[in-house]
Figure: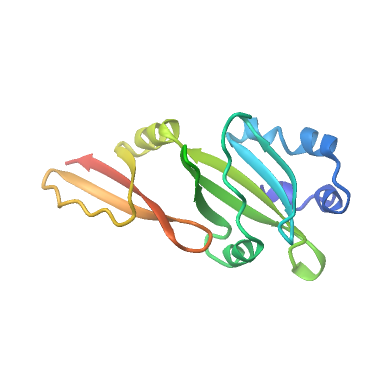
Length: 168
C-alpha cells in the first residue's frame, strides 16, 4: 500500500476520482498481493473507491477518520482489525501524502482472517492457530506451549486474540 500511497496519480484521484484509473492501477493488488479488499478515502472519510476480490463478501466499514489519524501514529503504524458477521478483517491504513505532511486521504487494504489464513499461519508457525475471545483464559497445559496476542480495532479495543499452541 505504501508504494501506491506516494503516487502523484493517487493524490490526483482524491481531487477527481476516475473509476477506470482505480480499476487498472489499484485493483490488481487484490491478486498480486493476496489481499481481499481495498478502499480509497478522502481525509474526511468520504469513500471514493472500494474493490473486493470476491464481490459476495461482506466487507467491514472503514474506520473513522479520527481512528485512522491515531493509528498512523502507532508503531507499527496503521494496522487494526474489524469484524463482520462472517469473519475478522485485518485492515492496514496508509496515509496518502498531502500538503505539509497532513494526510489528504487514506489507502486501506484488507485481509480476511478466515480458515484459510489460519491454516497458513499454522503451517508457517508449526503450531495450531485459532482465534479466541480476547478475555479467554485457558488453564496452563503441561504438554503445550501457548502464545496469544490481542487483535485490536482502530480505537484500541480488543476484538479477538490469536492463539498459537504447539506440543512440547
